[in-house]
Picture 1 (spheres, rainbow, N blue to C red):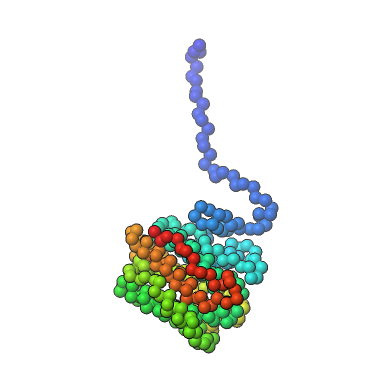
Picture 2 (picture 1 turned 90 degrees about the vertical axis):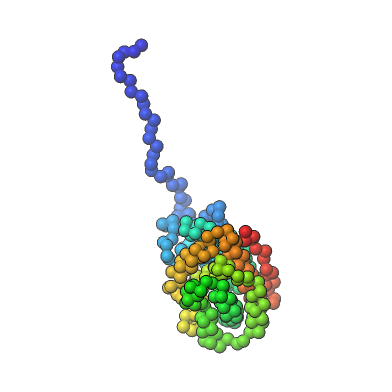
Amino acid sequence: MCDGSTRQTALPPRPSTSPPPSPPVSMDAAARGPSCRRGPLVPRVCWGRDRFLPEGSLDHNARLAWWPIPRSASCGMRPPPPGRLRFPRSFMTTDAMTDPDLLPRLRRCTGPLHDGIETLLRLEAPMPLARYGRIVRGFHEFLKLWEQRVRHALPEPLRPWFDARVRSPFATRDIAALALPEDAALRAAARASQHRIRLDSPAAAFGSLYVIEGSALGGQVLTPRLVAAHGLTPDHGASYFHGFGDRTGAMWREFRQLAQQHAGADEDSRAAACRAAVQTFEALIETFQPVAAPDDPEAAPPLPAAASAG
């Protein structure tokens, strides 16, 4: 029966706007500090206390490039024993927010070649001065040919921009400082490798540039190791890997913007950039084959099969 009173309908509870509680962290995990987790796009993503690295920092920029950065240099974790330092080839995908197509695609299409160049150069192992000298000589022989071709493939308005960031003069300076001898094998290999790279468009030029520009970031991490191991400095023997020093991060961001503009606008351009990046890795692997120790079967890997650029 109706008793004449007003009946109020109970409202459903309002959903909570507070974030879900974090899962409990064990004491062991807390003691380890930052953790490295795996995601669907990249095998290893490192999280710090703030869960991301500030835009513009060296670690942030290095994670957007292919060049291997020691895990201990960016995660804050205890470094592995000497001689076992691992250089992951995958990095944070922060750049996917600003470069949704080109740079993530360049990383994917060149991924299988990362391990090949890392194994060949053995950058994670102790660096004897003789091997370091041959690596510098190899880059010099490669770049003095490659830089001319890339410059020709770029639009004329971009050539002054490219001229201001060439790196072969750094290698030339190291060769003089260390009195490195001529190396006919590396010179012949660098010359022969150029046929692998098809630089017939601005998109192809930026795809090839991606490989060398990314290596500049890794050089910032390698330089302190050269100083510690051999007493080299940017002014004496470590000029190439030091490169542009503190300007490297800003130069990488500038490159990313131009690459997206000139090589990321359409599918044909992105495919051309990926092909050129793959070809550049293959050319570098061919160039550095003479550096491999003849008694080390793992030091001279065959050219790995790259993922399709399409």
